[in-house]
Length: 286
Image: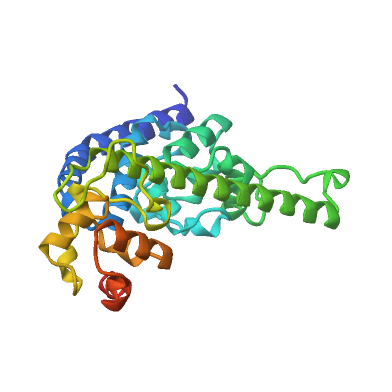
Protein backbone atom coordinates (compact mmCIF):
# COMPACT_ATOMS: atom_id res chain seq x y z
CA UNK A 1 0.00 0.00 0.00
CA UNK A 2 1.56 3.31 -1.08
CA UNK A 3 1.48 6.53 0.94
CA UNK A 4 -1.58 7.96 -0.84
CA UNK A 5 -3.59 4.78 -0.27
CA UNK A 6 -2.57 4.82 3.40
CA UNK A 7 -3.79 8.43 3.72
CA UNK A 8 -7.08 7.54 2.04
CA UNK A 9 -7.64 4.57 4.35
CA UNK A 10 -6.81 6.67 7.40
CA UNK A 11 -9.35 9.31 6.31
CA UNK A 12 -12.04 6.62 5.93
CA UNK A 13 -11.28 5.21 9.39
CA UNK A 14 -11.37 8.65 11.03
CA UNK A 15 -14.69 9.42 9.32
CA UNK A 16 -16.13 6.09 10.52
CA UNK A 17 -14.95 6.80 14.08
CA UNK A 18 -16.53 10.26 13.96
CA UNK A 19 -19.87 8.84 12.79
CA UNK A 20 -19.82 6.15 15.50
CA UNK A 21 -19.17 8.81 18.15
CA UNK A 22 -21.85 11.04 16.66
CA UNK A 23 -24.67 8.45 16.69
CA UNK A 24 -25.48 8.99 20.38
CA UNK A 25 -25.48 12.77 19.87
CA UNK A 26 -27.86 12.40 16.92
CA UNK A 27 -30.28 10.33 19.00
CA UNK A 28 -30.20 12.94 21.78
CA UNK A 29 -30.91 15.72 19.28
CA UNK A 30 -33.82 13.73 17.85
CA UNK A 31 -35.31 13.29 21.31
CA UNK A 32 -35.36 17.08 21.78
CA UNK A 33 -37.05 17.94 18.48
CA UNK A 34 -40.49 18.30 20.06
CA UNK A 35 -39.14 20.99 22.38
CA UNK A 36 -38.32 23.26 19.43
CA UNK A 37 -40.59 25.70 17.63
CA UNK A 38 -41.85 24.64 14.20
CA UNK A 39 -39.27 26.55 12.14
CA UNK A 40 -36.28 25.47 14.25
CA UNK A 41 -37.56 21.88 14.34
CA UNK A 42 -37.79 21.80 10.53
CA UNK A 43 -34.19 23.02 10.17
CA UNK A 44 -32.83 20.67 12.85
CA UNK A 45 -34.64 17.68 11.29
CA UNK A 46 -33.01 18.46 7.93
CA UNK A 47 -29.54 18.68 9.49
CA UNK A 48 -30.08 15.37 11.31
CA UNK A 49 -31.10 13.65 8.07
CA UNK A 50 -27.98 14.98 6.35
CA UNK A 51 -25.67 13.98 9.20
CA UNK A 52 -26.97 10.39 9.08
CA UNK A 53 -25.95 10.19 5.40
CA UNK A 54 -22.31 11.02 6.15
CA UNK A 55 -21.59 7.29 6.44
CA UNK A 56 -22.34 6.98 2.70
CA UNK A 57 -19.68 9.53 1.66
CA UNK A 58 -16.20 8.28 0.74
CA UNK A 59 -13.91 10.49 2.81
CA UNK A 60 -11.01 8.42 1.53
CA UNK A 61 -11.40 10.46 -1.66
CA UNK A 62 -12.49 13.77 -0.13
CA UNK A 63 -10.12 13.68 2.81
CA UNK A 64 -11.01 14.08 6.49
CA UNK A 65 -11.58 17.49 8.09
CA UNK A 66 -13.15 18.90 11.24
CA UNK A 67 -14.82 22.14 12.25
CA UNK A 68 -11.39 23.39 13.30
CA UNK A 69 -10.28 23.25 9.65
CA UNK A 70 -13.38 25.07 8.41
CA UNK A 71 -13.24 27.29 5.31
CA UNK A 72 -15.92 29.85 4.40
CA UNK A 73 -17.74 27.57 1.96
CA UNK A 74 -20.16 30.36 1.03
CA UNK A 75 -17.38 31.76 -1.16
CA UNK A 76 -18.44 29.04 -3.60
CA UNK A 77 -21.23 30.30 -5.84
CA UNK A 78 -24.38 28.32 -5.08
CA UNK A 79 -23.53 27.67 -1.42
CA UNK A 80 -25.70 29.69 0.95
CA UNK A 81 -25.77 29.73 4.77
CA UNK A 82 -28.05 26.70 5.21
CA UNK A 83 -26.32 24.67 2.50
CA UNK A 84 -23.01 25.37 4.26
CA UNK A 85 -24.52 24.06 7.51
CA UNK A 86 -25.68 20.93 5.68
CA UNK A 87 -22.21 20.38 4.19
CA UNK A 88 -20.67 20.74 7.65
CA UNK A 89 -23.25 18.28 9.06
CA UNK A 90 -22.14 15.86 6.35
CA UNK A 91 -18.48 16.25 7.38
CA UNK A 92 -17.41 18.61 4.58
CA UNK A 93 -15.67 21.70 5.94
CA UNK A 94 -12.99 22.72 3.44
CA UNK A 95 -12.48 23.83 -0.15
CA UNK A 96 -9.92 21.05 -0.51
CA UNK A 97 -12.56 18.39 0.22
CA UNK A 98 -14.97 19.86 -2.35
CA UNK A 99 -12.17 20.20 -4.91
CA UNK A 100 -11.61 16.42 -4.74
CA UNK A 101 -15.21 15.49 -5.58
CA UNK A 102 -15.58 12.97 -8.39
CA UNK A 103 -18.68 12.93 -10.58
CA UNK A 104 -20.16 10.16 -8.42
CA UNK A 105 -19.43 12.04 -5.21
CA UNK A 106 -20.99 15.20 -6.62
CA UNK A 107 -24.22 13.23 -7.10
CA UNK A 108 -23.99 11.63 -3.64
CA UNK A 109 -23.38 14.97 -1.91
CA UNK A 110 -26.12 16.65 -3.95
CA UNK A 111 -28.59 13.99 -2.81
CA UNK A 112 -27.34 13.93 0.79
CA UNK A 113 -27.84 17.69 1.32
CA UNK A 114 -31.28 17.47 -0.35
CA UNK A 115 -30.36 20.04 -3.01
CA UNK A 116 -31.93 20.54 -6.44
CA UNK A 117 -30.94 17.54 -8.61
CA UNK A 118 -27.69 18.17 -10.51
CA UNK A 119 -27.12 21.59 -8.94
CA UNK A 120 -23.65 20.80 -7.55
CA UNK A 121 -22.41 19.85 -11.03
CA UNK A 122 -24.14 22.75 -12.81
CA UNK A 123 -22.63 25.29 -10.43
CA UNK A 124 -19.24 23.56 -10.80
CA UNK A 125 -18.48 23.47 -7.08
CA UNK A 126 -15.41 21.28 -7.58
CA UNK A 127 -13.86 23.63 -10.16
CA UNK A 128 -14.66 26.67 -8.01
CA UNK A 129 -13.08 24.97 -4.99
CA UNK A 130 -9.93 24.10 -6.96
CA UNK A 131 -9.48 27.77 -7.87
CA UNK A 132 -9.93 28.74 -4.21
CA UNK A 133 -7.47 26.09 -3.04
CA UNK A 134 -4.86 27.02 -5.67
CA UNK A 135 -5.68 30.54 -6.97
CA UNK A 136 -2.21 31.00 -8.47
CA UNK A 137 -2.14 27.72 -10.31
CA UNK A 138 0.64 25.69 -8.70
CA UNK A 139 2.47 22.72 -10.20
CA UNK A 140 -0.54 20.42 -9.61
CA UNK A 141 -3.07 22.73 -11.22
CA UNK A 142 -4.79 21.86 -14.46
CA UNK A 143 -3.23 23.10 -17.72
CA UNK A 144 -4.69 26.32 -19.14
CA UNK A 145 -7.75 26.05 -21.32
CA UNK A 146 -6.93 26.39 -25.03
CA UNK A 147 -7.82 29.84 -26.29
CA UNK A 148 -10.31 28.50 -28.83
CA UNK A 149 -12.23 26.81 -25.99
CA UNK A 150 -12.59 29.99 -23.97
CA UNK A 151 -16.14 31.32 -24.43
CA UNK A 152 -16.59 34.82 -25.76
CA UNK A 153 -18.22 37.50 -23.56
CA UNK A 154 -21.53 36.97 -25.39
CA UNK A 155 -21.31 33.19 -24.92
CA UNK A 156 -20.53 33.63 -21.23
CA UNK A 157 -23.51 35.94 -20.86
CA UNK A 158 -25.78 33.39 -22.59
CA UNK A 159 -24.40 30.61 -20.38
CA UNK A 160 -24.99 32.61 -17.20
CA UNK A 161 -28.53 33.46 -18.38
CA UNK A 162 -29.22 29.78 -19.08
CA UNK A 163 -28.00 28.84 -15.59
CA UNK A 164 -30.16 31.57 -14.06
CA UNK A 165 -33.22 30.37 -16.00
CA UNK A 166 -32.60 26.82 -14.73
CA UNK A 167 -32.33 28.08 -11.15
CA UNK A 168 -35.58 30.04 -11.46
CA UNK A 169 -37.37 27.01 -12.86
CA UNK A 170 -36.03 24.81 -10.04
CA UNK A 171 -37.25 27.33 -7.45
CA UNK A 172 -40.69 27.57 -9.11
CA UNK A 173 -40.96 23.76 -9.30
CA UNK A 174 -39.94 23.42 -5.66
CA UNK A 175 -42.55 25.98 -4.58
CA UNK A 176 -45.24 24.19 -6.58
CA UNK A 177 -44.28 20.87 -4.97
CA UNK A 178 -44.48 22.48 -1.54
CA UNK A 179 -47.89 23.98 -2.33
CA UNK A 180 -49.16 20.59 -3.50
CA UNK A 181 -47.86 18.94 -0.33
CA UNK A 182 -49.64 21.58 1.74
CA UNK A 183 -52.90 21.00 -0.12
CA UNK A 184 -52.64 17.24 0.34
CA UNK A 185 -51.73 17.62 4.01
CA UNK A 186 -54.64 20.02 4.57
CA UNK A 187 -57.07 17.63 2.88
CA UNK A 188 -55.75 14.78 5.04
CA UNK A 189 -56.14 16.81 8.24
CA UNK A 190 -59.63 17.92 7.33
CA UNK A 191 -60.69 14.36 6.52
CA UNK A 192 -59.55 13.28 10.00
CA UNK A 193 -61.17 16.19 11.85
CA UNK A 194 -64.01 15.07 14.10
CA UNK A 195 -67.43 16.64 13.84
CA UNK A 196 -68.30 18.92 16.71
CA UNK A 197 -71.58 20.47 17.79
CA UNK A 198 -70.55 23.82 16.46
CA UNK A 199 -68.86 22.73 13.24
CA UNK A 200 -70.30 20.00 11.06
CA UNK A 201 -68.17 19.05 8.11
CA UNK A 202 -70.14 16.69 5.92
CA UNK A 203 -68.21 13.80 4.40
CA UNK A 204 -67.14 14.66 0.87
CA UNK A 205 -67.39 18.44 1.32
CA UNK A 206 -64.39 20.39 0.04
CA UNK A 207 -62.93 22.97 2.41
CA UNK A 208 -63.31 26.57 1.13
CA UNK A 209 -60.14 27.56 3.03
CA UNK A 210 -56.97 27.73 0.94
CA UNK A 211 -54.34 26.02 3.11
CA UNK A 212 -51.80 26.49 0.33
CA UNK A 213 -51.83 30.16 1.37
CA UNK A 214 -52.02 29.92 5.17
CA UNK A 215 -50.03 26.69 5.62
CA UNK A 216 -51.13 23.61 7.50
CA UNK A 217 -50.86 22.44 11.08
CA UNK A 218 -51.74 19.43 13.16
CA UNK A 219 -52.81 18.48 16.66
CA UNK A 220 -49.20 17.56 17.46
CA UNK A 221 -47.87 21.07 16.70
CA UNK A 222 -50.88 23.00 17.99
CA UNK A 223 -50.32 26.54 19.33
CA UNK A 224 -52.30 28.15 22.14
CA UNK A 225 -54.66 30.17 19.91
CA UNK A 226 -56.29 31.70 23.01
CA UNK A 227 -53.30 34.03 23.17
CA UNK A 228 -55.16 36.02 20.52
CA UNK A 229 -57.73 38.36 22.04
CA UNK A 230 -61.16 37.26 20.83
CA UNK A 231 -60.38 33.53 20.73
CA UNK A 232 -61.74 31.56 23.67
CA UNK A 233 -61.70 27.84 24.35
CA UNK A 234 -64.85 27.18 22.31
CA UNK A 235 -63.68 29.20 19.28
CA UNK A 236 -60.25 27.54 19.46
CA UNK A 237 -61.93 24.11 19.19
CA UNK A 238 -63.86 25.30 16.14
CA UNK A 239 -60.66 26.53 14.49
CA UNK A 240 -58.90 23.24 15.21
CA UNK A 241 -61.84 21.33 13.73
CA UNK A 242 -61.41 23.07 10.36
CA UNK A 243 -57.62 22.55 10.32
CA UNK A 244 -56.33 25.77 11.92
CA UNK A 245 -53.94 24.94 14.75
CA UNK A 246 -51.16 27.51 14.50
CA UNK A 247 -50.81 31.22 15.09
CA UNK A 248 -48.77 31.45 11.86
CA UNK A 249 -51.81 30.15 9.90
CA UNK A 250 -53.91 33.03 11.24
CA UNK A 251 -51.09 35.49 10.48
CA UNK A 252 -51.12 34.34 6.83
CA UNK A 253 -54.86 34.91 6.32
CA UNK A 254 -55.91 37.35 3.61
CA UNK A 255 -59.29 39.08 3.54
CA UNK A 256 -60.99 36.33 1.55
CA UNK A 257 -59.74 33.58 3.87
CA UNK A 258 -60.69 35.61 6.97
CA UNK A 259 -64.25 35.85 5.64
CA UNK A 260 -64.33 32.08 4.89
CA UNK A 261 -63.05 31.21 8.37
CA UNK A 262 -65.47 33.67 9.95
CA UNK A 263 -68.38 31.94 8.19
CA UNK A 264 -67.06 28.40 8.75
CA UNK A 265 -66.87 28.71 12.53
CA UNK A 266 -70.13 30.68 12.80
CA UNK A 267 -68.89 34.00 14.17
CA UNK A 268 -70.74 37.25 13.62
CA UNK A 269 -69.98 39.00 10.31
CA UNK A 270 -66.60 40.79 10.36
CA UNK A 271 -65.68 39.50 13.82
CA UNK A 272 -62.14 38.43 12.82
CA UNK A 273 -61.44 41.84 11.29
CA UNK A 274 -62.87 43.77 14.24
CA UNK A 275 -60.78 41.80 16.74
CA UNK A 276 -57.73 42.13 14.45
CA UNK A 277 -56.76 38.44 14.69
CA UNK A 278 -54.32 38.68 11.79
CA UNK A 279 -52.52 41.70 13.23
CA UNK A 280 -52.35 40.10 16.68
CA UNK A 281 -51.00 36.86 15.19
CA UNK A 282 -48.29 38.67 13.24
CA UNK A 283 -47.16 40.43 16.43
CA UNK A 284 -47.01 37.12 18.30
CA UNK A 285 -44.75 35.42 15.75
CA UNK A 286 -42.26 38.27 15.44
